[in-house]
Image (tube, rainbow, N blue to C red; front, top):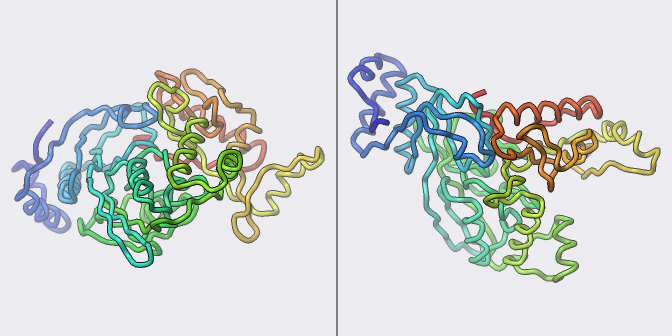
Amino acid sequence: MCRGFLTPEMRAVTAGGKANFYSQRADAILASDLMLIEENVPLAPLSTLGVGGPARYFCQARSEDDIREAVVFAHEQGLPLFLLGGGSNLVVSDSGFAGLVVKIALHGIEQLAMQNDRVTFNVAAGEDWDAFVASTVESNCAGLECLSGIPGSVGGTPVQNVGAYGQEVSDTITEVRVLHLETLESITFSNADCQFAYRRSRFNTADCGEYAITGVSFQLTRGGAPALRYADLQRHFAEHNGNPTLPEVRAAVREIRQRKAMLIVPGDEDARSVGSFFKNPIISDKQYETLAAPFVAFDLHPPSYAAGDGYRKIPAAWLVEQAGFSKGHTKGAAGISRRHALAIVNRGGATAADIIGLKDEIQSRVRERFGIELEPEPVFLGF
């Protein structure tokens, strides 16, 4: 491991153009304490799936300047750079990553009262997501309660516009603060600037890899009613309580997630996953009619949900099971959760190759049977 990074030899490399820019930034960063950069750090323990090899270099960034320092180090060394959040949506290759992994460890939550019972939470990217949601519920602020139990960090949620049980983070995000990895300047994006869509944003599409998210602002409603849009929640409270509180909805969501192995519980191999491995595909009404035709003859109708004019969303879990992959399916040390058909799990000792092999087999069968290409949700590192 090493502290800092600017050796005389490395400084000599910076001769003109963009190199001079990075060298100047490095001189400014040297005025502050330098973070520790480690070598050959295992990444599997830093992901919920628990597979993959080491990072050639690794550091924890506790401030924006730490991120700047990491960017300069990667540039000076000619290394690829990867920003790691909570590791809940990540598949690391067995060979690891031959670059610098930067663990985003910025912390802090600021709560600001606004007008008309609105409350703004300014949250650093490294905060644990579920712990933050718990704090909003404890503050009697509605808007994120149905996103309880989702693993990972706050900074990861805008990237794929995390959503569950009838809510999406884009419903409440007002601003996303980022560091531009090319200019090393701080920028603030509005909700509209983020270009949110279903499991998408500018951060995982057009501008993928361009920014490090450093903080997110959410606007919630103090004393607001909890959201009960999801069928499982509606059934739960129809049986127990027709007028639930925010804490009761949070508890119910976590209970449902645990029942489906979508809540990280130590020792539960069905929860050793990245959550839903595939996105729910959106197809045209005409495509849906073609898909449904063989089932209609038996008075059956494939499940679907409206997804805009002329389009429908098909549950990926239904497609996976109809393609012959039942809950509990096992292929070596990899498998499908016994409680959720969308969760590919590491049953203990699985390799990244095992996970990818099962992923490919599922995609192939769904494609052959339904003509639909399942799109994976997680990020793949080092492949």
